[in-house]
Image 1 (tube, helix red, strand yellow):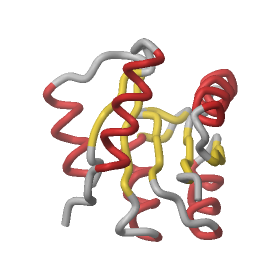
Image 2 (cartoon, rainbow, N blue to C red; image 1 turned 90 degrees about the vertical axis):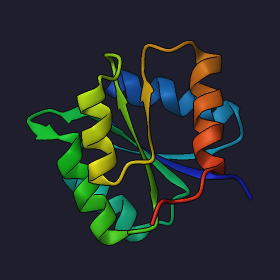
Image 3 (cartoon, helix red, strand yellow; image 1 turned 45 degrees about the vertical axis):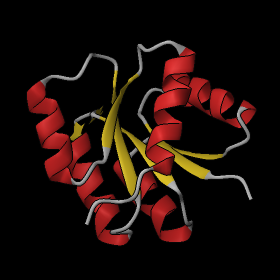
Length: 125
């Protein structure tokens, strides 16, 4: 059965690019563009992993992660961002419950490799 991925990003183009890329790799993909849509998706569906943008309009990605993990505490969540990770962002992502970080500006093969690594990782306790 294909792995199911939730992409949470307020930019339609980013959701479309990630969706197409991951669908071609054999994943089942759902998307959310708001905090409310993300919470609804994780309430109604079982995902193997969620990719959450660090900023969704006026909402912090960390707040989204908190809300998602309240509904699905064992869901693996990876923060995504258009800018590279800083030590502070990585620390805040881990505090929020993320298992990792992927830059949207990486090459396609790097994004796929990172995602496969995180899918193989075990959820932190």
